[in-house]
Length: 118
Image 1 (cartoon, rainbow, N blue to C red):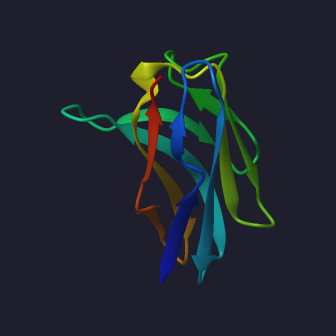
Image 2: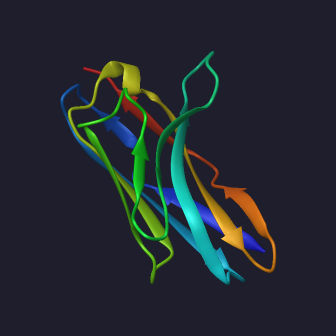
């Protein structure tokens, strides 16, 4: 069994910053890609950023230059540093991980609410 537990969401004013964390636990041989997605009310879930085990990153255009994804492989944890937050960043943020346990499966966290409001 694999679990992903997110933390760090909350309410912040426009222009502020938040740092999300997502820790994986369980029977894990290796984690390949880890990522963050978000879903705003009434919208589909969308990619925010991904990072490979080697550190290669990919970002949605809407967050480039403002968000930074990173990971600590030893801790099986992925982070999302979010700066210069905008009201349109308001959403539930989900982490995921492609976990190898003989075969590779994608696992999702439960989501953490991020609200940007004055």
